[in-house]
Image (cartoon, rainbow over all chains, first blue to last red; front, side):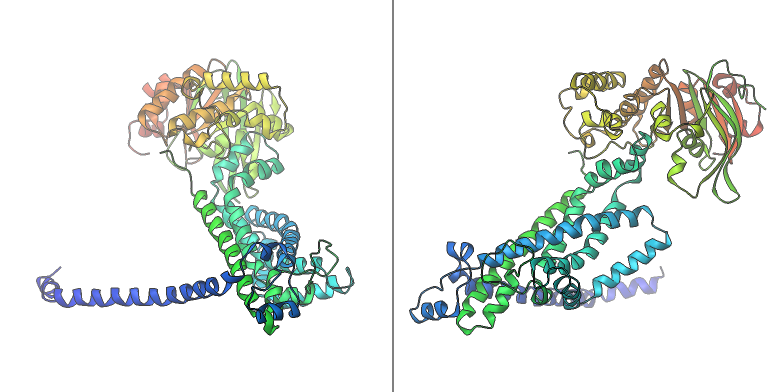
Length: 300
Length: 260
């Protein structure tokens, strides 16, 4: 470094410090710009939704418009709840997990095992395309496949097929990424013991990557939990608790849409939204915990 | 070129014209022929990239995992061509220990030792399993250190302990041959010397093939030594003779530190 440039540094220290401060301020400002809306959204939902949060909200089915109107007129809390939505959501999500999780994990492992095979490139591209398809389109597809030809009417099954297709790309991706993180030596160690291929996958690779796999599954679940559009065309909704997968079934986001369309039940929109938010948030936190656990365990 | 190539009294492994290529026409191991003495430590040494690990991994057909690797020539285990043996049978008779300690992270110490049986679907009675685990861990001098924490995860052990656990995992299957791919290169000197002592004890019961780029390690513990250079088996002989009186100028150059 020449003497001249050193001179430059010492001369401009004051100006450089000022620049640093301005930049720091800018960063803080922009960061708070993203935090403020989140706080406002959560705050609003909690304040508006908490009034309806009581025991019956979770165990009773949704009220009809008249009951809600009477309750509002008498200044009481609206009776009934979203039990039909909660059970419906669980039913649909359970079904779609049963379809998407085994398929997704197997495809993910296939992609990891055959990185450079032409079929893997093809599959990977398909997965990406699938990720980009709007959920409502998947609803239409599921309507054509299931509603029109298999269950001959709106059904939980049709809803779960649409959601399963949505879950697939995320599970495939996360499985492949998780498998890549497992050291090759672990796999070789299993093979060196003479283990057959399926045992290596089921007894070594999947248990080793378990937390990573569950993270992917939980994230994909929290993504489809809030889906409304594909369910409108498939599960339709129902005012009663339904466990028959061939019958129309409600779901929490569907109920929110229905409540929104009824001026007497707008208060229930907030409570249902609060429930959905808490549920999805806890899934996200859980998956975050799991992925933190995945980092290699070290001796203390 | 060397005396030991086909003049072993009791060879357990015989290598005949073995060539291994990672790419078409690019050989990592070039027409190697050698006999491996039973119940002895044979060190394979040479500079990085000389094909020593590649040669070692041919003995238990690890190259089968990577379809782009092509192998020519034959290896005999007790006069049976290993290509005529099932991979599972072969790997039961030839155990392997890797460069970095790799206990299965989801399994306890106990499960790691018994993993060979578990992963092959071999069912054992409880006391049979217990005695196998105890014997294997005693053989690798790990028993006293872990007997109270057998059901803790193997990954909580120190590096040297993990590597001994991996050796226990390999010998729990009671193999004839033990392949070790630079087993101490990731370990500290104290753990290294413990593993070296252990290997000297283990050669009573097993034929040991040890890949190392550490010449002094080969000198300390091996009975026979192979020197490989650029895929060729340059020299193969009794360790004490080879280290004092190398026949090939390349071996001499490596041993005296001119390259490598």
